[in-house]
Length: 91
Image (cartoon, rainbow, N blue to C red):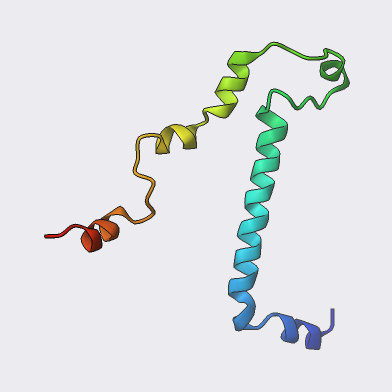
């Protein structure tokens, strides 16, 4: 690659853009790997695909109720609850 092209595209102004795109690609990749490895309806091997429709409700429940969902289940659906409380409570 020519040095002019490197200097043109690798400027400090574009680092946040590269970081945001990198995070988005990482999230997409993580979700794809999660679906391929743990989703009960995705069958990669030919032997598993020939099994047809399986009645695996416990495996599906385990996939649907993952660790992140269990972590946020009893929490308030606010991003910053302390700041929201500061501005909304009439003290």
